[in-house]
Image (cartoon, rainbow, N blue to C red; front, side, top):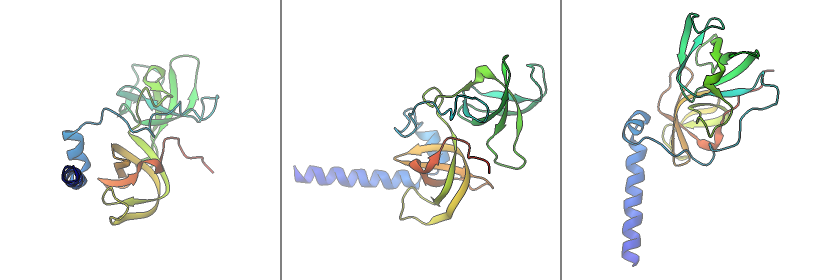
Length: 190
């Protein structure tokens, strides 16, 4: 029995080493993550009853428009799981939003209200924010620190065993942060 237990621990350890050696792109291609970690499954992320200045999640791949019209020019595409900040809303079908700022100036435009949810159980965020936390080269606190006390957005999140493999503003790809260090609300503006 002891021999079986030791073999199991050895196989588990080797598996973790193999997984840790993969890049986020390889992990995403080989093993999609259908089940989010418990930290992601939470109640709605609306920070107040007034929708203005609240964080929402894109429900479907969609376009950000220059005006409140399906026929308006497209500013850019956004994807299921992207975070947006509601800047204005009307009684009809449009929100005026700001996207997570991955390059300056931040993109602002209109998005159809049907493409937005405020509940992480309906659309799991693939973006977030880190405030004053370390970013690592591997999913291990003992690995090399890529950046100390990082403050900013993270993008293209892949979740694995309590860690998130992501991209940082400025183009750093396949870096790791602890999953509980990622927030899903837009930071307060001073």
